[in-house]
Image (cartoon, protein in one colour):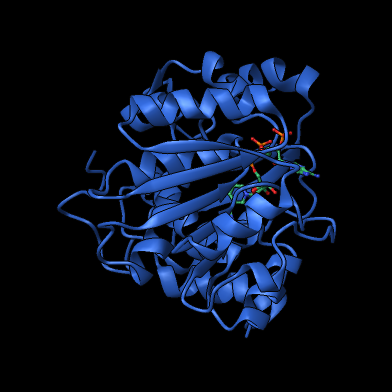
Length: 298
Ligand SMILES: NC(=O)c1ccc[n+]([C@@H]2O[C@H](COP(=O)([O-])OP(=O)(O)OC[C@H]3O[C@@H](n4cnc5c(N)ncnc54)[C@H](OP(=O)(O)O)[C@@H]3O)[C@@H](O)[C@H]2O)c1
């Protein structure tokens, strides 16, 4: 779906004086970096818009969405744990949000709340910067939650992927993502989470490893050790706080290419901005605002 208007104004020239409110809902939410990133973009583009974070628990989700509807919110982001539950509270979904079964960006289009999944582009664009030809590549995905589903929808756009091994603790969720992968025409292989010898074997034979679990967020050690990682492999940890998770540290020790979680955060944020405003996102401004919060990672 194309959302950039042909008459997009150049950066810093938007000057929309209409006042609009945007927000992010989730729990926990205190550490969200989206307000810093989106407010920097609004300011730079001379838009009289503001973006704040609301803590919303599972029990509060339905009332929260109803309240946002009543105040005619212009748009909002949705983060853990509501990306799947929000779906049934919206009026319409983009095709990719339907496929992924989850939404992280909502746009108010004439009073209707429309759900999008910008995590898909958020995941894919950093990968596409490093891999141009997917023919014959082997991928390992750790985790089977919403982000794994977004990764599968994005990877299904690519031709020639040989296999996607998926490893997850909860077997029911693992089976659900395998069904999705099959429906998308991908060769997905399920694996036992506890079998570390098999994990090592899969890691060493993978061209791309993506951690889509929240392991690392609270300083947990990754099950993927440095000696499981080949130096030719690309390691992508979608956890963005801390920037250098245990998996990223292990990947550095292995001497391989790294994709940081903040790269996904930025890309999904660019897409959300573009959906809300119809304007090209001021990428460098958003990146500088984000990097300013934790320093340039090496
Ligand atoms: N960089 C970005 O822009 C970006 C975007 C989206 C999400 N994220 C991050 O990605 C992570 C996952 O998000 P999500 O929306 O996919 O969450 P989700 O749908 O709740 O899925 C969480 C996944 O993590 C696994 N998991 C959690 N704790 C674990 C542990 N201690 N050991 C093993 N597995 C564990 C779960 O396994 P079980 O099924 O076994 O419970 C599940 O596979 C979060 O940390 C989130 O902050 C980053």
